[in-house]
Image (cartoon, rainbow, N blue to C red):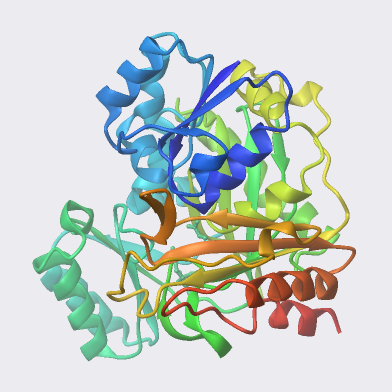
Length: 425
Ligand code: AMP
Ligand code: GLY
């Protein structure tokens, strides 16, 4: 089978490495892929948002199955375009990807179907937002741009001044473009956060092993918000009892709600949850695998990934038993100095023995090949994942591999997994 994976980050590298385990897979293409993915797949110089070019490529190369991984092409309708040409895909149609593409949509969906989430209000007029926040006078308050914003569209304002700045940047300066035409103002929730990715074909809902992201740039959850600096799985806060509650109150109701709206979701649905004193609530939905959650979840998947993805496409997921290892996994991101602000590119990388260490996988996120040499090309450069019998072991192996890797300006968090370890005690 010839497979096409749309995307070019660490998540896509993890998906590609897993798909390669299936002996039926003869060739994998990535649009656009990256320097490290080039070792595992044929990289094609087509951007993940260039849907006409992706579709043409898939038709010309007789692709048998396509995995659309990032949010932008999904929200823009990449799956619809490929399916219109008869190419089977893993990923939601455009009318279902809106669950991530519009926070106004997802909040209204949760309200309509009684799915637990933070209280909220929606605005199109900046003056009205400020008036509402002033009257409410409850801080911190959470302000979210309606549309996609590279994971940066959420601002937690500690006072009225910060709220005014946020509203001005989003709605007037349009820092996220059209995504800021509407904003959602939300109640501030507290509690541990859990990421749960689930396979769903609209009939069955199969949650994967839970995970914990580390969003801030620096140790101790300090510094700016990033796309994610590391992950661990499973998440110790996510007990069997909480998982059962989530299935009953969140996962299945979301699946049924999307069906009832005529927007059946097929693919990987990402639940960003907060375990509040009043029970688990949805912080956000994503219409795709999380990054870097995928880099800890897929290494623990025991069932063949392509088989699961095809079952989702064929709507036969309920007939499949999807199994995960009971080991633990940790992923530590190595970033370019300065990230998430501006950073240098083109630094030559030395991997030492990292890639030969047992139970270690080095996923590439922001790397490129320059005259045959691997150089940095993005903010998040690598995701170093290790598995082990428990979280301590996985973390030790991941950090040992990191010691081997060097490039100018490289930095990483030293405390990935520490909150999870503390939670278990
Ligand atoms: P997101 O970009 O939607 O993942 O949000 C980024 C982060 O903002 C989340 O991981 C939470 O830590 C935080 N956040 C979002 N919504 C809320 C909320 N209603 N209350 C508290 N924190 C929130
Ligand atoms: N790690 C969070 C996300 O993928 O959105």
